[in-house]
Length: 422
Ligand code: URA
Image 1 (cartoon, protein in one colour):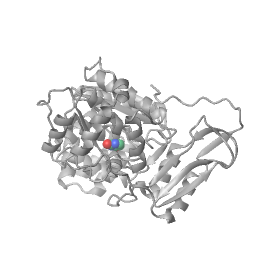
Image 2 (cartoon, rainbow, N blue to C red; image 1 turned 180 degrees about the horizontal axis):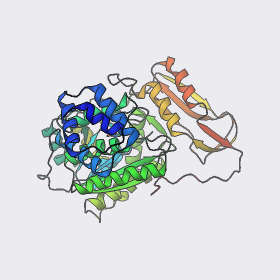
Image 3 (cartoon, protein in one colour; image 1 turned 60 degrees about the vertical axis):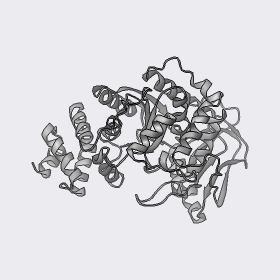
């Protein structure tokens, strides 16, 4: 087999055969196919697509590139969720302990920020002492003892995806349905969860901008999970507006703790409960009541034990930014739009995300919102506060948020988009 013929097949809109797919994924993982060759193939896939058979085979080849985990020793049913990525999407933080408090085991293998979207591990690392890297034995022991674990996928799990994910991030080949679906599902199937709820984001701050594309991605992933014996369901959720009132690492941890304490922004609470109900249903725990577990403090108890079990101090003060800049409303009226992508780019430029793979992130950087679509605002009132430790970044962030909102005259009728679209 030679890689040029595989690239030419897809470049010329052909269908890749099973043998071609198995070979190219394996050869890339072993380093026999070079990054520049795989980027050409990824671009051909982005431009010309793949059919369901090709996607299924590509996913199977990525799973086969590494080990598979196994949770059969656990007494509880396993439930996991995965978001396709958004701005202010801190839902995993309150959700994993909440679902564990309701009786499921939640093995939440999570990622770092990708482009303008935040990463769960970057957020949790703002808690002093907390560790994302656990051995398989440590992960199982936290899962067994606490009921929930949030950690990085080990090096042995879908190594083909690890290489390809990093390559796509720097070659403009992230937004391809076959590549996103196989990337997410290879990790989730190899992880060995019994059930999976997918939160497929749609809107400016998501990789899928239209409902049609989000639906296509969701149905592709549900099909892949089901074919591999994982009970898989998907919700299509709004990402035209940031979730909650914060985008940034420590800022989002603070907001998640508010949710676990029974408060927090209404959209974050609503989505956390909607996903919890789906996860509990998929795990067969249909009698569980996640709203009660949030209200009576049992989800907070699991959170505290989970953070401690991974070396973190749940009582430690979270980092705060050295510099802040307040952006004010230029007019009075009703806020009718706040663009998730622009806010995500601002948080990223303030230091919450990375420009290159190896860059560190700032724990305290990000954007704190003081109004959301539907709110009345008054000229001169604070719309958002930008946080960073490096004030030379304010200029880039201000350029990103310029034009990110619309204010209509007071009294204009406005209905915010629902959080769960379908
Ligand atoms: N999340 C993933 O794990 N992979 C993608 O390709 C996009 C989002």
